[in-house]
Image (cartoon, rainbow, N blue to C red):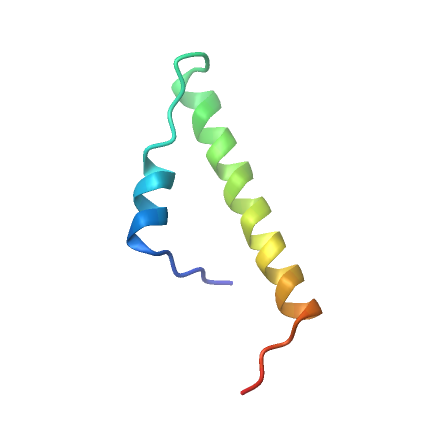
Length: 52
């Protein structure tokens, strides 16, 4: 699945940082977040099909 990001959401995603977690932990968090987003979009697409 390919996601298309708005400029605002892409900037926000890139700016995710934490003073409380290491760079590696933050990187892993962002990977999990992206996976969760893809799963939610996929689920939404199957529960509310888009007409062509």
